[in-house]
Image (cartoon, rainbow, N blue to C red; front, side, top):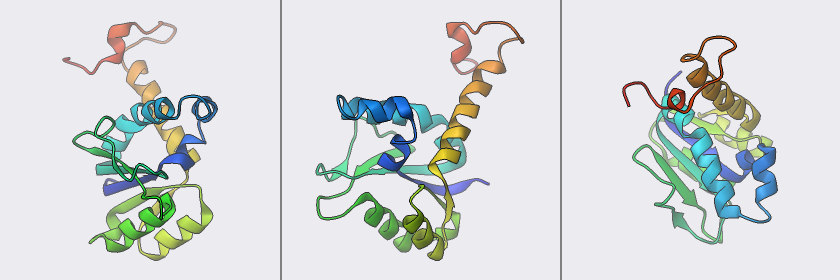
Length: 156
């Protein structure tokens, strides 16, 4: 199903990628950046617009990580990312065309009761990993190692 809006619980998802979860202690900005790059292709294929919400004191969006179809947003200090996500779902015009990615059961229940669909962070990351493998495997023969050019979109 193609959704109008994909909303992702950023740190919930980030903690499901072991290498990125380890980076949090030393390079939190780098971990967020790598997560966005890992998921942006799959996210774009699933929904017209994607919003990743992180807990944070920064409050606002991150233009360095945002693009035309993907927005990175930090919750204000007085709200958690979960609260922001729940408010976004409750205020959107078509919650039934919204997918929220989280493994937080309370958040899952809240956004589901508002009419949104949910997907676990583990399931979403598995989809991202499968999509990344498809990109390379379409251009290589079985047993052939991919080359750098295999990783670029066709016609690039």
